[in-house]
Length: 346
Image (cartoon, rainbow, N blue to C red; front, top):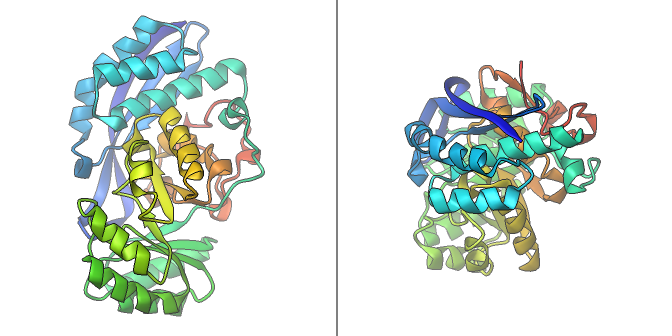
């Protein structure tokens, strides 16, 4: 049974300034949740909210007491479906806050059963993917330096942020430094539909695997226009937040990018993956600039994914938490030697 719950807020510095088409950040706020049972097991989860979706660390802190009151009232952490339903009824929005509790509960349940989370789910730890490492927008020389540093650290898959008037120059510069790595690109809603089609045609020459969110989420017809004409596969991120969005984008993209901070629970993430498969879509799991306190849980979804962008902890100057090993970007679930998600305070 649940013995106690609490949470704390931390501000974490990023190793480099992280720029996307909407702006640049140098730090991130994370609210970490702890749920302890009567046997001394502690489940860890975290919220790293995005103001783009109307959520902040302050709003997370404001609703967590109500969400944790639900957990304490239900009492049994194994009643995951009941708790998820009641949390959604109690706080309809604030998905990052809800998923922090969901992660902590799953961590706790797996620890009580003395198994890693992937085993609790029945997944194959050897069938994982490599996470991409993101190169944020900056001047060309800095982006070159970041790319060279990523290669030196062993990363073989990079995601490049675009959405400027120099996008082609950026990809040319990246390919000059990293001619052989796998490349994804993310425009973060920055292009018009016709502009996207033209740019993607030029970008295809640089052997990119796909383009993520080329147009604003508020323009679904524009996304379909791009999808039907693009020279590269299209991934939907900002256009796909929860399960209900998957069927809506199924004829407008090739790949859906789910994020725990958008969807609100690990169970919802699972439902999104299976629904995407039913619609013939490939699946990616992305992240915000998160610590291992939440990324560890996302890593356990890796056997179900085609692509992963779970580099949040790798972008931090220092992560107070350890998690699933990611040598050279490879999500090594088989190398995890702890029960639960693997997240623990260093």
